[in-house]
Amino acid sequence: TLVSGINEKEPARCGSAIDVELTVFDAQGKRLYKTEKPMTITLGSRALTQGVDLLARGMLIQEERLFHIPPHYLNPVKTPVAIPTALKTALSGNTLRIVHM
Image 1 (cartoon, rainbow, N blue to C red):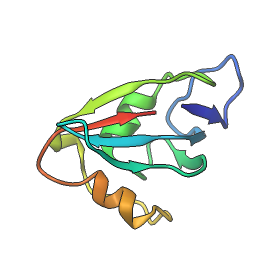
Image 2: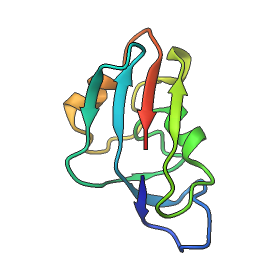
Image 3: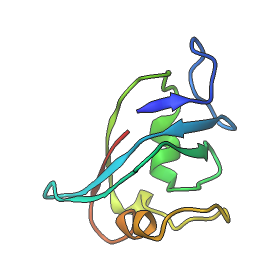
Image 4: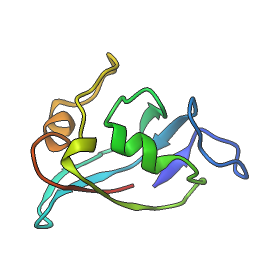
């Protein structure tokens, strides 16, 4: 869920610092990670993965999306951002990840 960080009527775009709640599942639906509180990411920074950056663009406040991210979009973190180790692990690997945000 996109919690805050943008004007209520403006969609999230590259450079937007957004506060999100997210859950990561493996391809079989097993939950790998769930945020305990909203976390801030900047779209376009690849703070999580290229897949999240691409798919979260255009989101509005309180919107929810379900992303199916193939392995080639689970690129390693490129920006030195404080990301929990468990989330980095959940967003890595050679198989599809499902992200509910």
